Image (tube, rainbow over all chains, first blue to last red; front, side, top):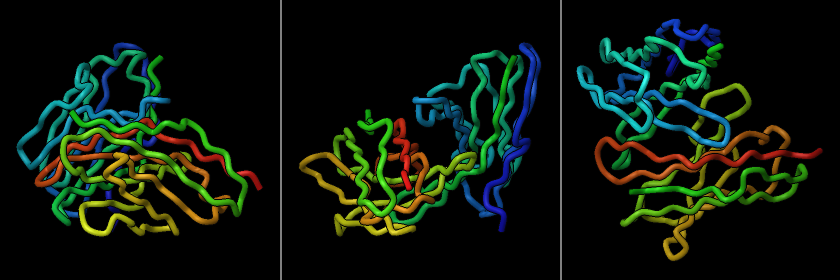
Length: 114
Length: 114
């Protein structure tokens, strides 16, 4: 049981390049999330998917797109990377227990855009 | 809208000393409250959560948190800190029921002196 996995762990891009961050979970969770973490800002939600086939914008969706490929996988795409997207990206999935969802996080992808 | 405040950006304690990390929330009803820990270079790990009932919640790694409705607080405590507790700690708040999107505080960085 690997939990939530993310690839790659590190990435350096040049401005204007595109890339896709991959996330997979093996806990059979319905909901999945993408966050970015910046110093002093905590975690900010980019997109989430409440179930397979649905996606919704979070707090900071501009410059990103997502795909819920199946129940296990939720990818985040940067079409044209900008230096402002330099950040640490976390994927999470959640299960419903005790009347609310509890999130489980992946190890993160550290992205630098030059 | 819900919000959560962690007033302390950094906290420094000596190994073996007690610890209290503060968390204040703003929400119209009794929220669901969480504490997460992030070790350097790692993802977030759930320490404990509060839904209802006993206001003193026990978590992993010897941590506990107390919900105080009158103060809108959910402070994290540990009686004796270990050097391995040095990490970033995040408080999160979410509405009850169904799929929820939590709001995270900006985090408190714990430094442990030997």
